[in-house]
Length: 134
Ligand code: ZN
Image 1: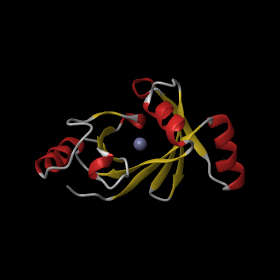
Image 2 (image 1 turned 90 degrees about the vertical axis):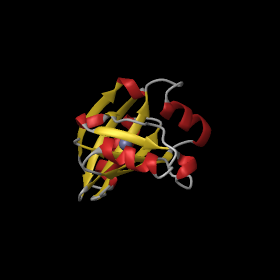
Image 3 (image 1 turned 120 degrees about the horizontal axis):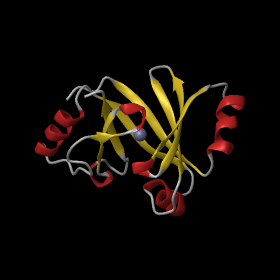
């Protein structure tokens, strides 16, 4: 497994409509894409910051993962995503090392990338995603 950089940081927000102007007008970043991931019950907005993206996550349903997170913890950093070549190879390797996984195999995330989540119990409380083209 070879992590090249932090691909993105996922931030849960109550409303993209409220959050996007802060990132654009206050921080001077540009939202280059808004995408709904129906599977995850979220709407996402992306900002490029060097090699890394900020991924804002608005819930589209209270019973989705972001809906539950907002209800329990409120707005804030939700997960960190590392870029790897192959998500399936990395998940296999981590599983063999005994890391507790949420996803045993890759699934499709935003921007057509493969993604997989590690369990926060295994990562000292940080919900960790790995993502890549493979
Ligand atoms: Zn993510």
